[in-house]
Length: 89
Image (cartoon, rainbow, N blue to C red; front, side, top):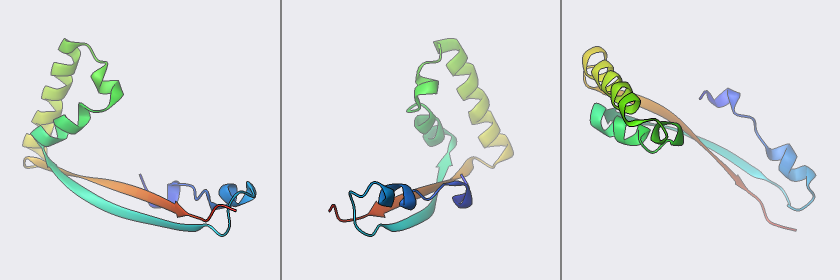
């Protein structure tokens, strides 16, 4: 997800009146996966866990083939972590 598309919730937090000044930070980071490690990650997502066995096998096989043939055996996934810190009043 692009950082500029992630809304900053600082005003929302401040408007509650429950907290003092809010400090907001965002951290972008990347992780590189080979096909096996990426499939392990996908297998933690509820939408993939709930697929029937045959559909999941076909889908995962297609993803692995794509990574191995079109992306030289690895892909890089970008992440964005947001942090809000504030003292409770």
